[in-house]
Image (cartoon, rainbow, N blue to C red; front, side):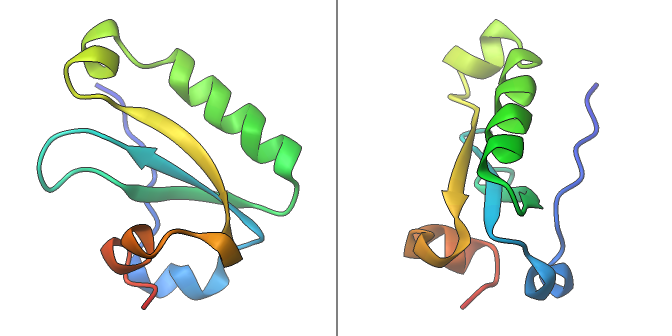
Length: 85
């Protein structure tokens, strides 16, 4: 079983420039901000590493992945599901 640090609502105010979001997954356990970075290259490397750890079932059946977004250009759906609005 994997343990991933999901940022809590009170930590959202301390988000850095780029955020990594876990997309897909089961109901109630998807589209969460996992971590934030100042450098886009670090964020991309982290997301790539995390995608490598997903099982084939998590990728295909649950559609899980990790994506990097600029915090200021984050789609509104992710903002509401993570308590940023």
